[in-house]
Image (cartoon, rainbow, N blue to C red; front, side, top):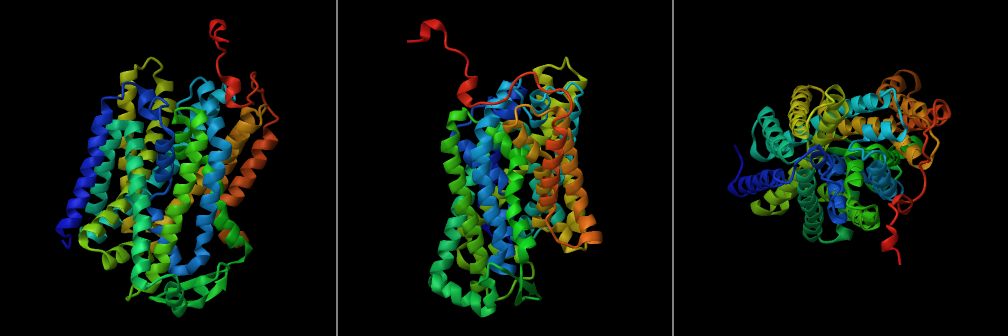
Length: 513
């Protein structure tokens, strides 16, 4: 093993702290509502940081810096799309979703919200949406375990299988014990670590290289096209070639990542769990600021890696590791790498809770309607472990593949992101802004979005050859299907419109002035 004492110590302290939080929160978890939404008690700062940390997984430290390192600033269109998506998600979705999920029979999951919001008596909405969550999130969790395996392997020199096993055990333990609150509190700490790491390392890098002008010169020396937003540079065998024009489709594909936010269950759960809809504006400012600065830092790491790392990297996604080890002492490097582990775990734990909620609330509770709160709580904990095991197996398959694309963090995340964004995004938007939408439209949008997201890469490769990111056609066709079929079927008996204040209970007569 090539691990040194400072790095090992830092990692152990971090992992023990996460488990300790899970044990502490265990005592505050009494029923399924506490376990899956924390009793809707999140303060705006915790909700904002938790949403950001659960969103920005290993791709913030591996995928984004790696893409910028290999392709230049032309790879930052994804970051721009994510920033816009974060802001508009908080602006248009957060307040209404917090209000409507509580109004819809205090729905604890997106699946139950869909059923209650559209007054679906067939239960198809709940079943189909829960299946989408289980399938896509299991893949998403596997990407997090792949990232944690790469981290432990790079830092400690242990095998990828052993590394993936360690990551799985730790996150499964504290998530299954503490549930949503443990997830949110640990996300707050993890989000702070991620934020500081992506500020500190670029600042150290700027000081080491001599300033912004020197960064420009060093990057241009490798390839002037690395600075062109309209070009993507080819990186092969440790060398940067001439840039190729991105084109309209590639730019739209990058920006379209922002559409995915409208359908991300682990982010929407933070909106549902925030203390009050009136806390949303404060949370929006905190959350958007966090995302802007964190993504800017991640892009800066990629550019600084081009200029500072002497030996070109075989795997561009190792740029954060390489820069941290080259520029800092072992203790600082250990803290920075622990932030990467925090990024991975903050997303994996959130996703495990959402899948566990789907299995417990949307499947088990429907089968066993007499289940007690205690029984549901333990089924939820068991669901975390079960899904974690399946994702762990998928991660091992990806790590053992001879095709590097199979274990690419950004590619795995891209597929799951598109699936959720296309299946749920249009339905969420219309459910909050179209009062008379029917369950038929919701079901059509959900099915069309999921099917197109899954099939588009193959169809595009065989018939169209556009290279368009599957989220774009998936979202567009799902929106069209939801709107078209949304006029069919039985309309909800209650009008779902208005602002938060419209749904506050009336004050007692004696309390009125």
